[in-house]
Length: 101
Image (cartoon, rainbow, N blue to C red):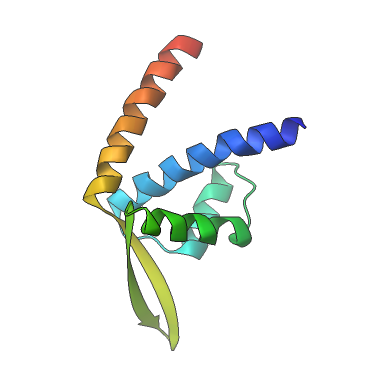
């Protein structure tokens, strides 16, 4: 039970991480998986890729397909809408942090 609750909570944090990194530079799935693992998130490719696709569908990310050594790699970058969401999330996270610290 506790694991499911934490997982739901952390999915929101993961979205914010993705937006943050996609603002700094183009990202792709396997790189993002490694980055999230470094931050302690136990997430699989089967969870991450649908998140990236949904964020693209919601116009938070834009995608560019690039041929890398004969394979198509999907690079994601933040959109204007994604930047707005990231700014709002940052403000809300900061307010929450001040309350719970």
